[in-house]
Length: 189
Image 1 (cartoon, rainbow, N blue to C red):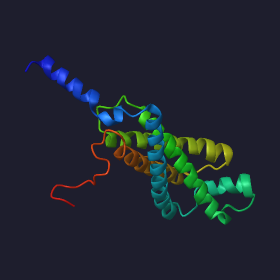
Image 2 (tube, helix red, strand yellow):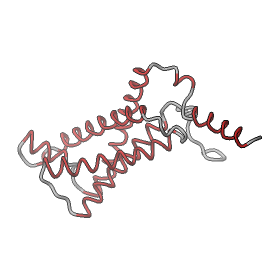
Image 3 (cartoon, one colour):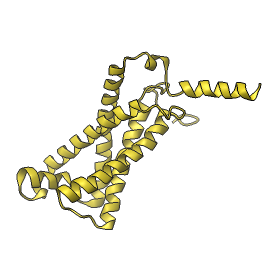
Image 4 (tube, helix red, strand yellow):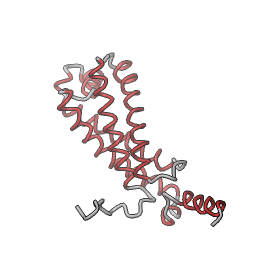
C-alpha cells in the first residue's frame, strides 16, 4: 500500500473518530440540550467531589459562605453553612452546564477520544474557573487574599472539579461507542 493510501485512510478515520452516525443525525438544538444535561449532571457530581476534597483539607466552608454573608445576610459566614453549600452547588452545576455546551461545540480535537478530551479540557476549564474565582470573587468582590498554601489548595480543588467534570462529560458524550457500558480491566473487574 502506498504512503498516500495510508494517509488517505488515516484522514478518513480521524475525520469520523469521536462521532457516530446517530450523533451526526441529531439536530443541533437537541445536541446542545443533551450537552447541557450532561454538563449539569457532571457539574453536580464534580462539585460534590470537589467539596469532599476541600472541606477536610481547608477545614472551612467554600467562599460562597463569605459571599452570602457579605451580600445577603450581613453576619458571620460560619452561620450560613447550608446556604454556602447550596450556592456552591448551584455555581458548580451552572459551570458544568456551560462546560457541556462548550465541549459539544468544540470539534477540533476529534482525533482523540472524548474521554481524553474531557480530561484535558476539564483540567483547563477548572483552572480558568479557579483563576476567575481568585481574581473576581475572592479579591475583587470579597477582598480576600489567600496565603500561598491556601491558594494552592484552592487551585487544587478546582483542578479536581475540572478533571471530574471533564471525565463525566467526556465519558457520556457522542462518539463514545457505548456510554452505558462499564469500564472493565483485562480479566474483568
